Image (cartoon, rainbow, N blue to C red; front, side):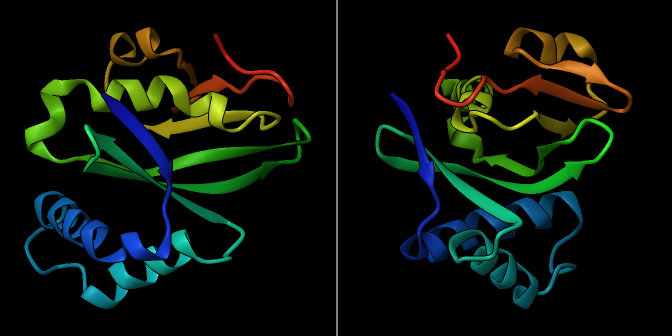
Length: 150
């Protein structure tokens, strides 16, 4: 069963391992310094108001993580969350952890404008998860405060 919760300070070491794998695969082995990864983890687990982290579990085993930053859109007069990083470790990808978390993500932020995901994947990937293209980003509308998504 896939579950998730906000990152806590005691998640730092296991999440570091996943972040290192993410950066080494995406950018190149050793290209991102450890200090930058630890700084990101600190922001996601501390009281930094602009970044939040989530741990994704499959059967109580850490399977992945997500990092979101808060952005404000003055044109809409609302705050949005931008999915900066999302990584599911390879052994857990077939279990559906990623899609399950992405479907639930807007309901974790009632009252926000949208969850935005910068990605070049075709809309057919995101539409079944509840996201719609907005300019160059995909976005899913968050439910009103006090309400949860179906």
